[in-house]
Amino acid sequence: MSSTTTVVEGAFMEARPAGDDGFEDFSPAIGEPLNGVPPGKWNRRRDGLPEGCPVTPLGIQGKNFFFLDHAQQFYGYKANDFNQAGLETLFGGDYNYLCWAWPRWGKPKQGRPAPGELIAQFSADIVGYDSARIRPAMMAACKTKGIWNGMDKLRGRGAWKASDGRLLLHCGNVIVDGDTEKLPDEIDGCVYPALGPLSRPWPKAAEADSKHHGANLLKLFRQWNFKRKDVDPVLLLGAVGVCFLGGALEWRSATYLTGDTATGKSTLLGVIESVLGDWAMMSTNTTAAGIYQNIGFDATAVILDELEAAEDNRKMTAIIELMRQASSGGLMFRGGGEHQGVSFTSRSAFIFASINPVPLESQDFNRMALLQLQPLPPSQSQPVIKEDELALTGRIILKALADNWHRFDAVYQRFAQELAEGGHNGRGQKTFGTLLTCASLIVGDKWQELDVPLGDDLTPWRKWLRREALAEYEDALPNWQKCLNRLLTVHIDKWSSGMKGTIGKELEQFYEMQPDHPDTNIDMTNGTLSQAGCRLVEVGGVWWLAVPNQSTDMKKIFEGSQWVGGSTGSWGNAIRQWVDEDGSRWQKRKVRVNGATLNCTLVSLDALYGDDGVMTDCL
Image 1 (cartoon, helix red, strand yellow):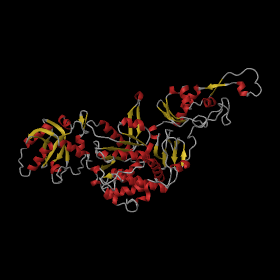
Image 2: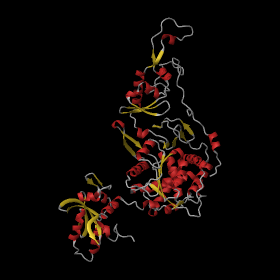
Image 3: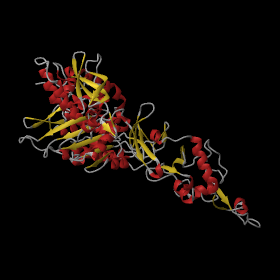
Image 4: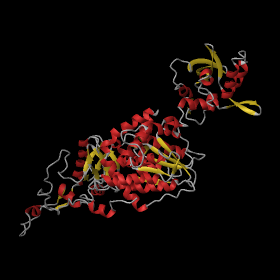
């Protein structure tokens, strides 16, 4: 991946903002004026602090007071933290400034001043600072700012969308706002605290370079043997863009790489990690708690390799739940010290990789692109990776995304329209539309050279990503159907041909015999079904399976699933999510089951096993 821009050239062009190598000195000599203002004689700001005070009050919440300190770091204080050590920490050890702003005077001197001695010094010496005055001043300043809500206002490192829609890149020690750089501070009502530095976007407005590097990264991705050769490398390039833009996006599409050993998953993840650099956290063994403790309020990405399914998937399930919340910027609640809950909004993009995907719900599948890797053909050489250029590629791509951010909404709408034509609902449009849009912003008109459509005609995408053909949706059944599948495949204590039967098998046999044998012994079938806590009833000339909404037998069937919890269950509500406009699929009735009259959900056998039944064999 050769480049017309070099690292050396970029180093000369890259401006260093004020404060990059240290912090402004606010310290006059003790007893001396600051900017012509004598000690203790300063004008008050609206919050009651001195003009130019290096500490910024942010607000209060309960017993907590929040500040940006002298270095723009975020601090939360309680009343007993305003001691000498706490105050000096907040002001960066600037003892002289504290003595200027809130001086503590000693006793007046006796006698006459010596030649050249200042009258103020003769009258009295400043012997320190008055912490008894500083404490209420700092508390009152926070009170003036009002109630602080950190989960809405605190923005860590990463990309963010300002109130007017522009893109802000919080690079830890500097905020990149278009072509300008600012020190961390309050911006448009949100707080961007100083944190450890991230790589900044490439400083040169290099349109040609961005297209060159983005196109070459896509060519590199194409050296892996993806199952969808035309589509998956493009989606992976888009995933790189989503990882960079995470916090600024309305929707963060996840990406899941799968493939057997020796398909190059880990090598490919290594390429992505090198491109993203410190804008991503990569791990092969972590937990959900480990992720949010490390990410916190940042909007940087998470890359997880070897996320393999196990006998106990609780750890993996918690990570997937975190991804699910992050996709839409959901609010997360976690326990904290002193019985105080901790809440934060997760805005990280996720990339996973494993040989076998962990168990996923439908709501997870439609949040991610599932990219399947196959072994390279014997005739194909291994991908050529130039490690020294990948970090440069990432910074140039970040610059391209920032420069093209203003185009995001218009490009997204065009892709969303094509995806809608391909059968995608709003969720699918968000997931794949966001990936394609980010890829588009990275490479621009280089799509033409790559034989990937981006111009006036985007119609190929409705075919390439038509919903019914995507692996992402093969197992993404609706909740009601998964619930019915669980119910119908439960074994009951009836042996036939050396095998135990299931509820579904009993119902199917009964239904198939009805046209030719209407006098089928219903009592025998119900005797079998009673062992599972359900029964058949005839209503309006149609046979229905009566499923009690609450019963001990039903709870055993759904034990360990998402449709049971505590002493109750939600399987009845799940089944009734099946859209039924005319009442031909399910009904609610009281039915006598195993000697008790129970509220039941009735499921039509016609809707299950009829000509257009949901359980009808498709082959």
